[in-house]
Length: 275
Image (cartoon, rainbow, N blue to C red; front, side, top):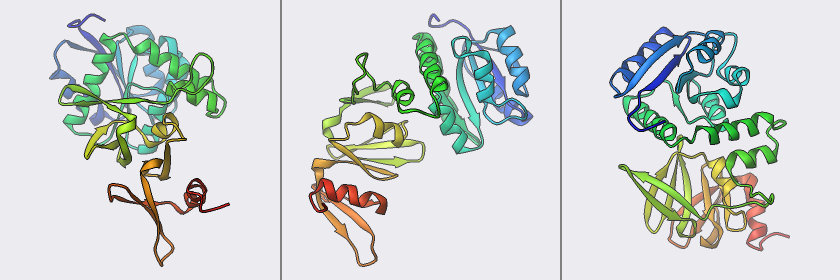
């Protein structure tokens, strides 16, 4: 899609107020045409096939056919760029796992909408939607979230089938993209739907799930000590234990982080404290 070309958008949501909110927000965007609205999955399928929009804002949970059902029915190769909309985080995360461009958790504010819409427009202009469709197809064809399917979706498998771990992470701030070398990262913490990379005394926020980061970082260098924390192993200075039975680690920088009890034994083995 050429830059400046009118973006054809379809809104799908079973709630009238939700459709109205998206319509109002889209009316303030340049070069946008709302080609239709649908209030259920079956109507969405028909609208996508007939109207052929560039972008769909698609509710995940709807009576009858869900947003996921819509994608399965249309087929990943024919599915337009998609931003999922949901009132439930668990569905938002599942939707994002399926390689959607982005997702909005209700109630979302204007700024969050702007972020999702800008990302969608950028990827459409860069013609990156086909790549997302390939990732989506790999996940949908995987059996029960098999590791191979997850690897393809995460982009962590080389043509030879060998894992390729991240060496750098792009961070977008105020319209500028900065590259953070993985070797500079001391630890990573979760912050809602975002992750914070802590490197060289600075925190960089990215929209990425901890699970995805854990899968894409070299396990010989990084370890997830808690559902909300990943550390670079060579930064661990001390394993902490308090009288109440809780565990933590102290890093070389002096930062202390909690360790989940179910991860202590594996961490102790790495530190040579367990046999």
